[in-house]
Image 1: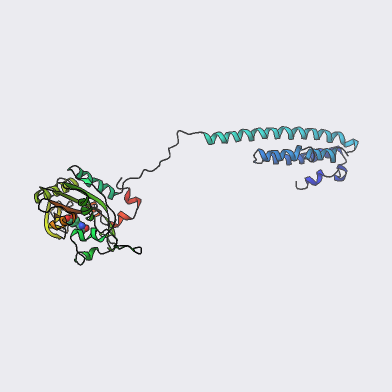
Image 2: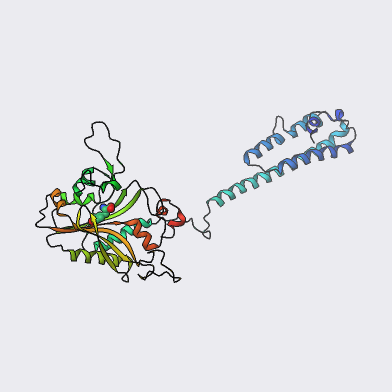
Length: 377
Ligand code: DAH
């Protein structure tokens, strides 16, 4: 077939065709070539090129046959060549027309297929995110305190040592700073005081009392930072909810009752609370609240009869620090310690969430692993 073009450029005499009987084979070859070309996959543009190469007036295959085979043919061959040529032309014209139609309707079909909406297909599912467990626990705690008249305030994560320490009755060389003297910021030249990432939410006690007169009942959810090495129970970033209530008639009894109410609301009515003496510079007296172990019901005995692994057999789990606001703190905010009393507490949220949901590694809160997050929709 590769030699066909050459044949088209030559006269029949040159091709050695002298008998009418030789003519049909010659045309069969040409027709086969057309049939194979017209059945290839093509779009309308390719179809137009094909049509030109066969039917084009100047140099189409049929013109070449007319010029090179028909016109110079001997009288004896002319009739046969003419007949074959007419048949070939009719074939080429009808076949290529047929092909054009099928290409056009095919193109329409794909366009309409593209636009068709198939209502039986499943929809596109766009996954809806959910609140991180820490955020959910913040909300649970906020709801409990809202129900007893507290409101939420939030404060800066970058603090001055005055609010983070001094005004909370922690002077510069006080030993409790050892745990907390941590992330100080590089300061621009001319800065008047150092800045640090707050190590607790307690500074907001001071900022709130500076702005408001008693009665004050606020909670402060937020992030805090300490130079702790990461392990299953430590992270250099974690979360707290600070609480502060100051009024003219707040008693130690009202304080412990409030905390007990909160703990029972949070863990369920089956738990008990207790407090032990502790020390914080900004509360006096200071206490540490414990909850009866939610895993063993306070018995200290695990499910299999051995020691409860969560409370290590103690039956109690340490929850958070609290106390009655130290009168010295009122001095920093111009409250009259003779007239007002109050209590404060600082709850570690990560720890509370781990206890409530049985999570044994704090790091999972910060790893953004969807397999973990999905368990708390
Ligand atoms: N700020 C303390 C801490 O981060 C927690 C704390 C203890 C806060 C006692 C309080 C409190 O308000 O009364 O370790």
